[in-house]
Amino acid sequence: MASKSVRSFLARLAFAGCAFGLAACGGDGEEGLGGGAPSAAISMTVVNQMPMPQPCMGPSLTFFEGTTPVDIPNQGSKTVQVSQLFGAYQIGFQVNGWYWRTCSSPGVCPNTNNCQNPDNAGQVAVQIAADCSSATLLQNWDDFTCDKMVPNASNAVSVALQSANPCTVVISGTSTLLQPTADCCSCSSCTASQTPTGQTLHCQ
Image 1 (spheres, rainbow, N blue to C red):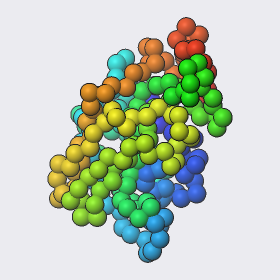
Image 2: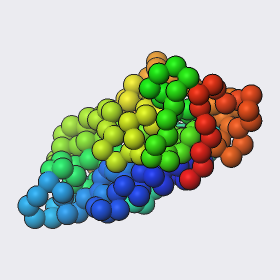
Image 3: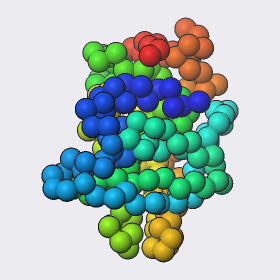
Image 4: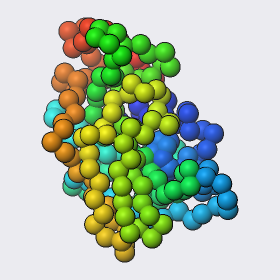
């Protein structure tokens, strides 16, 4: 359900290739944006242990190979290609569902960049070593997001290296839960009573 909301993310990434793949929202990372000769992408298998918040439906994670979304259902696994971005192997992803944007102050939620609202949660990426000896969660990764107030999954997910060969990482939830919109309503289905004061609906 959520890959639609990545459009603003992808638009910003057109220069490179969002998702972090270039890297999550993030490029086409084969140029490596960090300079130097192009580097081959690394195949990384993602084991998804991130539950989809009820009553939301669909795959709970979406990774981005350049501008191509790769949906992964909870308790499923898929292999994604991690390219170089800013001189490191990184790939961005989003936690699906519908969430309200962060407001700069109570009752005020500007949408100056026409960001989708509600949206999927993002601002996260996985960085792996060139030999896949380590895997790290990159938090508050907003280089390619619509703006800094999009729903943020930084504290809601964890990353753990399961195996270096084959390169395998596990994405899990934490005790910090993301709160979906009322009935998981989307930008086109929320009613006035489901929209908090200061929030405005916006569909891409």
